[in-house]
Image (spheres, rainbow, N blue to C red):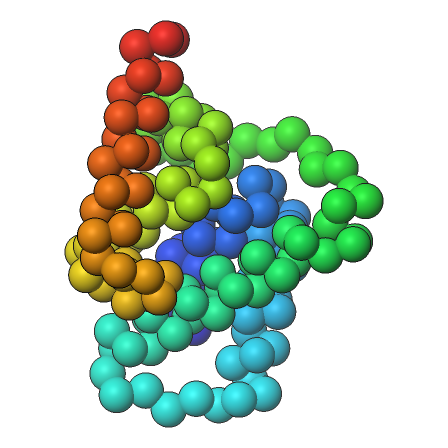
Length: 144
């Protein structure tokens, strides 16, 4: 799980929007891993399992009563440079489904086919959402 920690964190953060909730999700994913002891065909299958479980856990967390009754603190993430920070802030303004597509495609390096497998949706849907997300980011970037 350690080798996927960054990917899992980014995925959870993309859904939750703050570090503390993302860390709660990561802990829950780790517990699920420890309880189930899943066996994987290869490293890609293992990584996809962790991301799928992270997505499902984050969705459950965000939809929970507890989450809706709390207010997240504003925080800063460590960025490589100011431009990366600005871009990530724009990405965070996108609707969740587009944020996740951008994160999986650009930060995690997954192909559209792999993303469709992880999200259990059609490749054409992923391609359309990626295109829309890019367009939204372009518009937001031009507004700035």
